[in-house]
Amino acid sequence: MALTISQLSVLAAAFIYLSAFCCEIGMADDFTPEDGDVPDQIGSAEQDPAQIVAKALLCFNDKYVYRSCEESYRLNESGDLKVPAAKTDEYCDGPCLQETHLVLDCVDNILSNFLFYNKATVQDIRDTIRAGCGYGEDRGKFDVAEHIKAEGSKAYKAANYQILIGLVVMIMGNGLLF
Image (cartoon, rainbow, N blue to C red; front, top):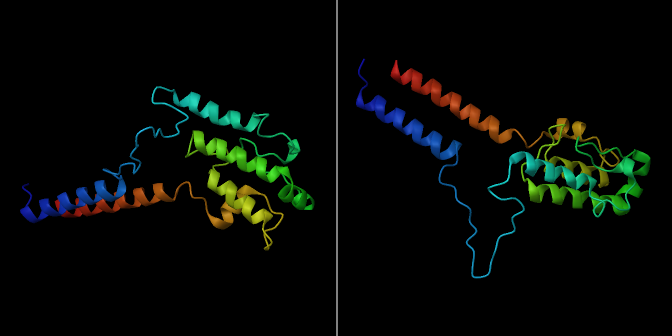
């Protein structure tokens, strides 16, 4: 069965759309180094992915980062913040808040798309802390999983969009070809 010119052109347009908008082909980094400018890079291309993840996990046990915060209030690899509502002022006004942000910065600088065991992103944790330390109705609520349910995680929004576009293109392509 031969395809007509119009079918081929629509199919080609669908593939171009898919590659340009879904996969971000051709998106380059905007950083152009000047003389003496060296970008901050923690990892290198030769590092094993497992080593990079292990380095990110070390941020949670770094004794130079967590020094004053009570251990039971510390952020862990699971993405849990176990701060009782009665201790909100102590957490938010004391060293724990700053030390938790240092840990999040450490993890984010090593692996920018780090996912905690509970599927939370670094930004999800930051949003939970902001809400828990804020003066709104969520003050004292540091349950990351509940916050993600209420607000929605940012981890899978891009992936869902790409899957949806792929399905639409497959359906369109199938309809045009047959």
